[in-house]
View 1 (cartoon, rainbow, N blue to C red):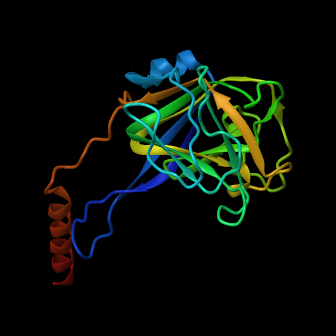
View 2 (cartoon, one colour):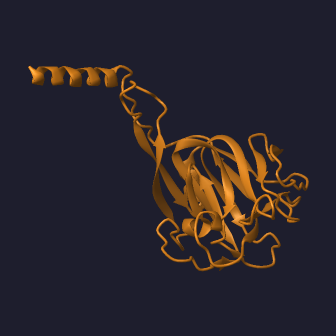
Length: 244
């Protein structure tokens, strides 16, 4: 299953003091099939979490999980382990409680420049119960999705009422690709950007992180460096001609 979404991204170039910077849209494509994601992503860096067990402290940054990626724990968290499980998984918990006075926590993956990512074999962090796919969300490139949005079960962007809880014992794959590079993604609790039924925290684990380090989508064709100024000059010339 594949879905697309658009988000505004502002270009950094400034053509002249009187001209607004041009804007373009990043296109996001959502995947629930690992093979389709692999084919669309091109070159991948894959982390399979086969190292020793680790547990990252609350409010910690730069926790290394691979040569390409570090993890920041944004908030206090609680006693739930965040890090490698020691048996082939990354385990963690997201919590929408206050990050200073309570157990609130987001998990930021600092990946360097990527065009997307995928997570495989996602389940409850205890491995013995279902997990709520509406409570775990992801922020990437300035956009937010619930896991249930990516699975096609909800649409939090257009929801006008509280989103009801949906649980699954296991999700084999979710992935997002963009035609624009970003420097990482963050796992968050869904309550941070939409209104949910259910608790304020959810534990999870997944056994593979795939990073799309190449973009196979056609790149926008850039304008020649002098063309915008030339067009601006021609416009001014036209105004002068019309005023005579």
